[in-house]
Length: 148
Image (cartoon, rainbow, N blue to C red; front, side, top):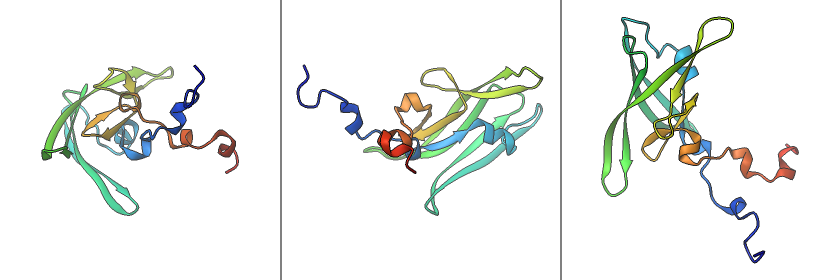
């Protein structure tokens, strides 16, 4: 007990951060018309860029008659198997707001919790906890956080 590497070992582990994944925000999707009204079907493409270069693209399909489900269709690379097409359903849930209306959430397929953002990493869209992601600010030393 108390030997080399016994304290704060997690500070030196190379955790992946939220910047490493492709974020899919349900609030952004709702604001930009990706979620359909009853009787409609919306199918649009979401793209990401990193440093001005394309980093990913998925097709989001939402059927207004099945409002509790969103279908994301994308291509991912699988180790030793090359590229693979994935069509992954994501559950949606609405919660009422105090002054009317409702708020929409993703239901993470990994842990079944409500989340506003899912991250595309390792071929699946899951929440930050399921992927074990940290925020980039958590990787900077505490004494340096307030200096910038």
